[in-house]
Length: 447
Image (cartoon, rainbow, N blue to C red; front, side):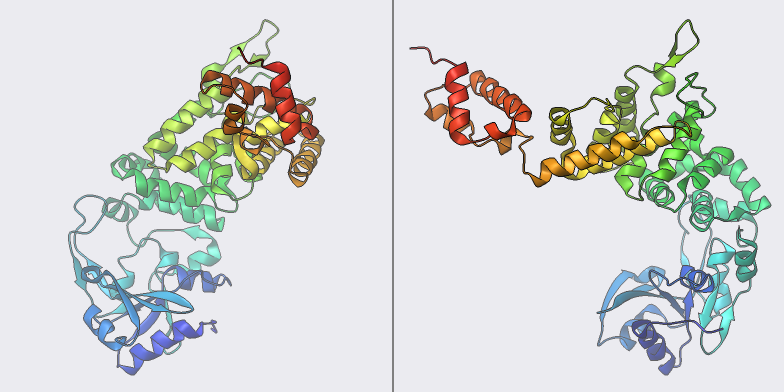
């Protein structure tokens, strides 16, 4: 077995071994190397205690990430590496963290505390692959299986239920039967996990190559009912509409898979139709309608993301995309596109157009999406020509209008709104003298 180990990682291993300590690359780093992937980062486990690690690397910058838990970060120009002492964990009391950490002497003891077999391997050039739980075999079988009894692993840390889904989704694996059954029976325990930890795992699932795999697993296991109960009504919800060949949930999964792996886009795709079941009405001819569902979806999304402790900026950006995703009028002209630009911004406009395109593609196989290609070209032309779409881009401002003799107050807003409307229709009007002429012509000053 021949793995590529970067020099900055090899430096740490060599330094530890020169001090007569063991040093293994562990966890996801080994998993990725066995899959033929370059790890994003490397973790090292050693029988050196934290204070010994600090002493060995006293000429390096080190960061005490959690000395009582055995982890020291050794910083180098080419990358930081977590160096963790072999450890075992005492009883978990709250389904989140161990009551205490006990340092161990053997790498096998350290591996036995980990969550899944595919993450419970260690490698060193001196000793080769250490794989007491047959993680390499599970990689070949493409399965996610807990180390030992799945119920015990999930009792220790309930978040492992969701992490199992995340690894299955990320790798395109199946969850092993006993692990799957325990996940299903114990999914309710996720309600005891902090919103921040749930959020981080959910976001990793959404940013995976095929998030629908993870979302389907979450539905089947019962995780959606616990962490995103608002999506439950979408499952199997028949749209009764000739323009849709999927239920709301399946349509949603199609859109989530179809957009780029950008968090705002994936979240907007996940929640863009979440309000449909609450706005459903059916006409006499049996056709379903969902009037104003985008507004309901925005309200629901804001509450969900706030519950997940998301930033105000993220909530705002996702809400803007959802709120505008139905603006697909074929006859939309430059004026309408500029209003969209003003609402969602220059970066957001291309996210919105992508969401709209994929949303349309996921309605039925013969859906026409050429309109969005044209719309994107039109937006790029507007931006390239630096045509104004916001009042801040007008050639005059409120102070200029006051200097013309108008008083501060409501009239200033009315004048700027009027000028913006005219410039949206005719970009050539956005010159100082032309705008002043429009003001004097439309708004007479009272003597």
